Length: 158
Image (tube, rainbow, N blue to C red; front, side, top):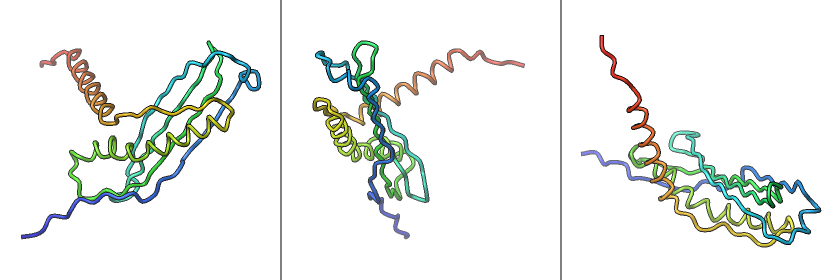
């Protein structure tokens, strides 16, 4: 009887892939008395770069606005190279969409916080995030889109 290969997961490298900071209204923006409205957008992507090796990129975009004027915009893309082997295909999506981003999130939080503080703005920390909940939302949206696509299609008869 042949032994089935054991699942393997390891972090090969964690790195900052991209970082950008814009302060279009400087220096006037620093004299604002009101706290800006802050919009946070977080998404991740994954791609296979070699056999059993994946790059996962978690991107956080933080935009602070005073009315229609942008106070600052920070975008940080934190990436990791993960070795993932002998995991069944049906479990690969959750690993890439939940496990890997969970490992990258503390790094992107620190980068965003540090950049905003170094830019001269009050401290800002990204809230904790459930990548499992985001993944479930994504699955539900995908299922709804499939249903909507199916509802609109008329049967074809010959």
